[in-house]
Image (cartoon, rainbow, N blue to C red; front, top):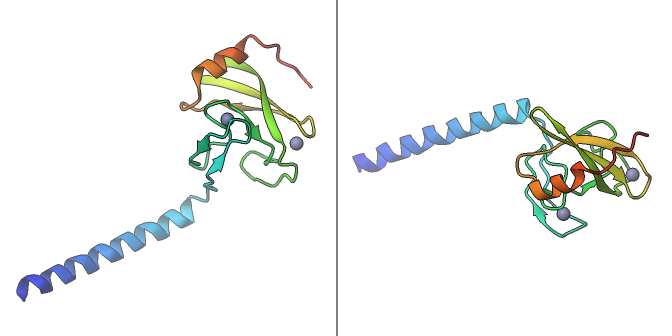
Amino acid sequence: MKDKLGEDIFSKEEGSFIETEREVMGRKFERKIEDFSCENCGTFVNGDGYTDHCPSCLYSKHVDINPGDRDCECKGLMEPIAAEVRDNGYKIHYRCLDCGYTHRVKSSPEDNFEAILALIDKPVVNT
Ligand SMILES: [Zn+2]
Ligand SMILES: [Zn+2]
């Protein structure tokens, strides 16, 4: 009986610790974490709050007005059209297939390196 009581107290303490952690996380990090399936190649992408493009074929979606806000109504498929080498990675240039909007994002470490390489030689279109 003594052992069981001890166990109960322990798990109660652990429970409240976890709850406190969660509360702090919820307040400090307001990233929007979304999983999505790539509309170009079908790869399932586990969102981490930063990933906005497919790590396999690099296609993205036109969802942001400002980076990360997800406020754009377009939702068109963004085609990777070129890439630039930067000190700490690559910048991928995109063009929206629906509305023609262009923007650049930093590549992520998970991105398919071959797919980035294939974009390096393409001319960067400045609009
Ligand atoms: Zn894809
Ligand atoms: Zn668009």
